[in-house]
Image 1 (tube, rainbow, N blue to C red):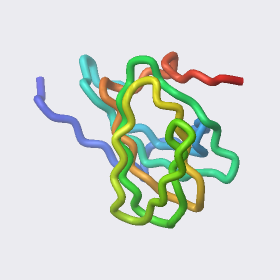
Image 2 (cartoon, helix red, strand yellow; image 1 turned 60 degrees about the horizontal axis):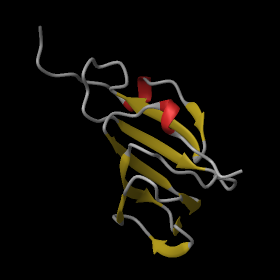
Image 3 (cartoon, rainbow, N blue to C red; image 1 turned 45 degrees about the horizontal axis):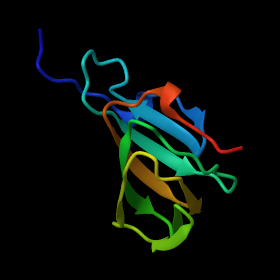
Image 4 (spheres, rainbow, N blue to C red; image 1 turned 180 degrees about the horizontal axis):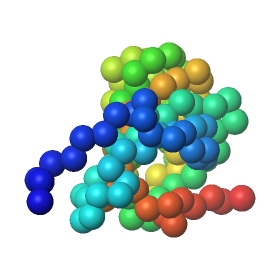
Length: 114
């Protein structure tokens, strides 16, 4: 069995998410400790939080801000944001980001106050 996995974001189906649309790599890897997502932020991204996941956002394109527990933080390309479990967050602006959830993404760990 190979000890590596290779995926191409161009070949991954786009899915809706609270932030906009995403392509998620390595979601099918058994015992994965992380996944990596290419996310296009929508204008109506929804504030949410995770009880288990830590997320790392890397802004690739665009300018805007992150809403983090009510604070607005300006972001631009190459901004990196570390989001701990329990932090209510959303990205705002015309942004393309890389999101690295640790542990691996779990769709059952997305929570909303609404």
